[in-house]
Length: 213
Image 1 (cartoon, rainbow, N blue to C red):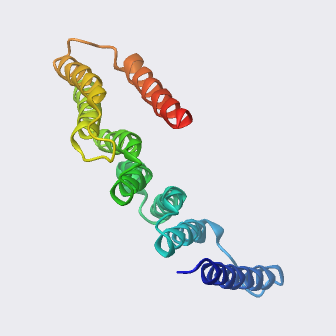
Image 2 (cartoon, one colour):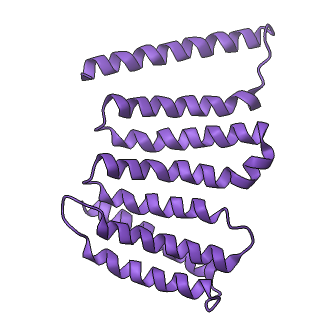
């Protein structure tokens, strides 16, 4: 879609949304209708997320739009579930939200192989999403956490990239796999300290690589 047509489409959609919102607010202020914001705030977030996804769909070069799009949809779904399905949200809300935050990074890599760095935050967030399902078992949760991180760096090495294989990824993959074994066996009871430290190191490395480029 040409840039001028895309701008026209967004302008029309934005105008329609603002007109609808204005009418609803006016009717609410005139006491003609009653708005239960707790029930509609979730769908509003999801609609905002869909608007960002539309940006990507109309121009796949705008890969950044996937991140706020899926994050807003994740917020919308978990908020809606909190109102109507509190029990399910308490059990799976964290997994759903973290899954929606991690998914766009995987899609960024799939659609733009040059952005191979997206594998790392995507893998970390999807790993955390899976760990939320482990209830009360610190050794198992810690083992899955480090195993997921090891698999993430393993994918950084294995998956195709324009610049070729990233051999350095084998080192953190091996170290994290060893930590996964130790924590799972209960030989290392330091998950509360090592977990955040590993995330800080990984996050700092991703930022360093991005800023260096």
